[in-house]
Length: 152
Image (cartoon, rainbow, N blue to C red; front, side, top):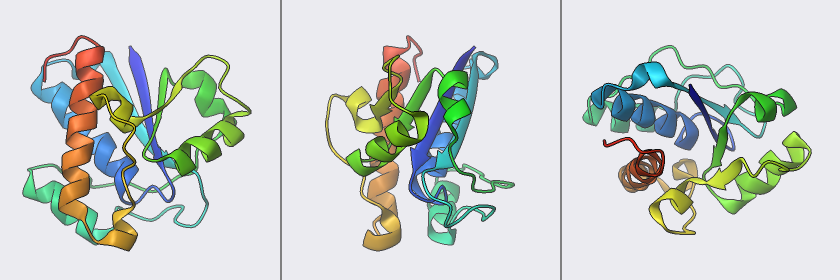
């Protein structure tokens, strides 16, 4: 079982979008039993909140449901539990590393690094670019699956 935790600032836009995109990709590949996929925040600002409505609408445009999501904060224990902890931008990576107490096993990565880029996925809460963010997330998730040997 490969365990993946996607992380962003509030866990209501980028990281849940990545969680549900990745769940769909592995399901479509017939490999969902091989993965445990979740998401979390680095902050406490949105704990318990659902996916932000524009992010939810963007996922729905692609036939992806995020029903039942409730934002939660990443914990130090997540570092031990998950195989991959995937942030959306360098700011997330710094906070994830702080929460985890370091990254001795090299588990913390930027999502776009799986697509061969050091590009940050900017927070659409501020930019309003949910469609663009969806495209970046899809590229990053496909790249991650390719690295893991899964055809999406």
